[in-house]
Image 1: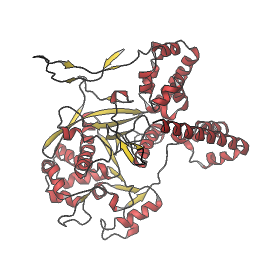
Image 2 (image 1 turned 30 degrees about the vertical axis):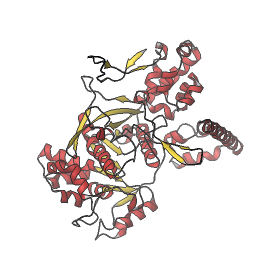
Image 3 (image 1 turned 120 degrees about the horizontal axis):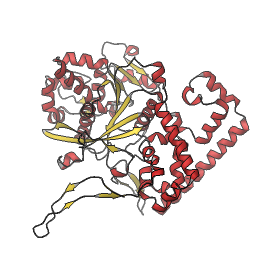
Image 4 (image 1 turned 60 degrees about the vertical axis):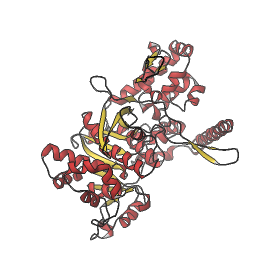
Length: 496
C-alpha cells in the first residue's frame, strides 16, 4: 500500500516542461485482523507495558532490533508474508487482543486525579521543555533533562493529570559518535525520517497542517506541529522546517543544543512564544505553565501579552496574573550553565515583540538581569524564569541549598534560607525503568498496588516477603541479560 506523506513542487527543466513530484512512503498493507497494531504503535503506552512491547518483538525479532525498537519502522519493513502469517496465527491474535483490551482499560479507567484532585484544577497544565526522552525510537533528547521530562509525561498519564507537553522537533536528533582509523572521534548527525516515527502532524478541520507564526529578527517564522501520544498525555513538538521559511529559519529546529547564540535564542523564542501560540491555536488554554529549566522562559512574556490584549491590562497587571499560574524547575547548579543573551541580540530578535508588550527593551532586559539597570549586562533565561514564576524548585535538597545561595543577587534583601526556591527530588517513572522479571516478582509477593503506591510504607515493607534465593535468581538472570546485550552491542559496533 502506498501512501503520500507530503508534497513539494519543484521545477525541473526538460525542454519547456516542469514536473510536479510527490514523495511516497511505500509500506505493506496491514491485514484487518492486525489493525489494532496501528493504534498501539502510535501511542507510546506500549513502551512501559512489556506485554505490548513483546507483541512487536514477536512479529520479527531481527527487524525489531535493526529499527531501534520503533514499531512504525517495523511495520514498514516487515514482509507481507509475515504479516499474513501473523493475521492467521490464533496465538498471536489472542496476544494482540489481550494487549488491546489492557490499553482500552488503561485509557478509560478512573485515575488518581479523578479520585483525589478533580475540581481543584480548572484547565490543563502545559509542561515546556527543550527536550523529551520518551524512548529510543524518538531520538530528540540528549540526557537527564529530557529523560526526566519524558518520565514526567508518563507519570502524568498514569495519574490522570491533565497535562500536555510542549517542545521542539529536532530533525537531526542526537549525534552518533564514531572513531576514525587513527583514533580520532567524530560525530555524525543523521536526519530523521519523520514519516517513520510514532507521531502525527497536527491538522485543522480542513486537513491543513496547523502552523504558528512568530516574527524573529524582522522575519516571519512559521512552524508546524507534531503530536506524540504517551498514554493519556499528549506531547506537541514544533518544527520550523517548512517551505515558507527562509533557509536559515528552517534550520532552527535542526539540532538540540546546537549552533551559536543566534541559533539558541531563536530556538528558545520558538519554544516559549511559539509553543504557547500553538496550544492556543489548537484550542488548549493552560491554567498552569511549567518551565522545565529556563529555555522556555519567553512563554511568560507571551502569556502576559495575551492577557494584555484580551483583558486590556497593563504589563504589570498581566505579569501579576501570569506569575500566579507559572512554575519553574531549575536543574543547573552553576550560573555558567545558564543561557544568557546580549542586549543587542535580544533587541535584534524581539524588537517588534517588545513593542506589543508596551515596555522598552531595557525593562525586558531588567526582568532577566541579576542586577537590573546595569547597562550591558545580558539577559539570563534562568533569572527571567525565576521572576515570571510564582513557584520555583530545585531538583534535590542539596541542590535547593546551592540554588538559594546562587541566586541571592535576585533577592537582595532576603535571607538565604528564605529565598523562595523549594526542592523536589527528581524521581523516575517506575514502570519504564523496572525490569519485567523484577516487576513479575513484585506482582507475586506485593500484589498490583506496588505499581501505583510504592511510596506507601506497608508496600515497601512487603519486599521482605520475597525469599532471598528467589530475589537473587532474578538478579542473576537480569545480569546475564545485561552482559549478553553488551556483547551484542559491541559486535554491532565492530561491524560498523
